[in-house]
Structures are given as C-alpha cells and as structure tokens.
Amino acid sequence: MDRRLPSSLGLFVVAASTLFIAAFDAQAEDCDRYSSTPLGIQVDLLADPMPIFETGQVLPSLGAFAVKLRPAKQVVYPYKSPSDHDAGMGAVLAIEYVPPGTVRISLTGVAQLSAIQDNNMLPLARVEPAEACPGELQSTEIQSAGGHLILQISGSTHMQLKMLVTPVPLGLVNSALPEPPQAR
Image (cartoon, rainbow, N blue to C red; front, side, top):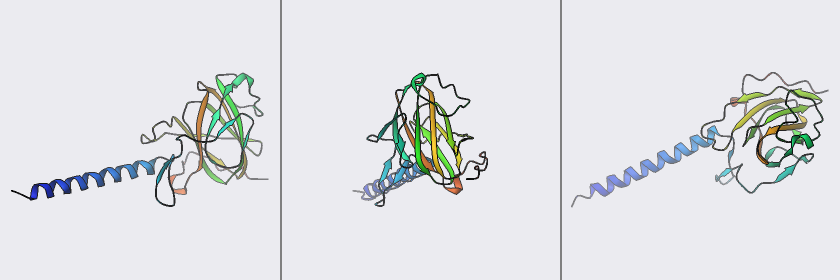
C-alpha cells in the first residue's frame, strides 16, 4: 500500500485551502465594505442588522447604515443641485462630523447623490466598484474639509438603501478629486 497518496492529497488540500484564504483576503482588501475586528474576524459592513435612518435625521459619525427613502417629491432638499429632486425615492441626511481628507460613499443601489459641506456643493468623483464587492452598485468619493456633511439622495427606485461612508486611506485616493474647500 502506497502511503504517499494520502500525504499528497493532504498537501493538495492544504495548498488549495491556503490559496482560497489568500484569494478571500485579497478580495477583502479590494472592497471597503469588509473590515476586521481586533481579533481578526472579517465583518461585512453592509450585512444586516444595521441602524436605519430616515430623511431629516442626523448621524453622529461615519459608518455603515441603512436609509429609509420616501418619494423624492415629499423630501425637503435644503440645497439646489444638478440632481432631479422630484425623481424616484430620496432622503436628506446629515453627518455631524466627517474628518478632513478623501471620503468614499458607497450605495447598494443606484441613486443621484449630492454632498454639501460648509454650504458648498462638493464635487463627486465616481469610483468603479470592485468586482469583489457584491451588492455595492455605486461608489463616489468627496474631498472633505472636515466637519458637518449633508447628503442628498434622489432618483432611487428602492425603498431603502444601505450606505457605507468611510475615509479612504492615502494610498487608495482617487486622483480625479479636486482639493477640499478651505474651512472658514
């Protein structure tokens, strides 16, 4: 009886498992919706359960959350933007504090988005979602000067969207973004 076969099979299984884990880790690095806990456990930030906010509410900080939308015609948009504020479903949310630098806003559905900081409409730079990010349909980046941020959403066909608002590490910044407006 040849004992090398089970040993070879065992090495193959270990090698295949290692490649699978490495591929998963590479996938997670390409996708900002995954994070690791201090114990190294992978967490999907857009998975249920998550807090649900409605139009007009203020969020304390960045993170992952769901937004319950209503017909855009029923939403009061405080800032005029190029978006059609009468189209589809929408909402307006405020985030109390966003750090200065590049911030990525990812949505699980397509919608028109505008971001306002210090009474200025911020330019949005579209980011192609990574193929490794299932469910993430739209991502944009803004340059934050730091402080309060207002997000206006309209034109969605969904009743609820999940959002992930996160700072972008310096090495992954989209070069198409202009510099942030200077804080007053």
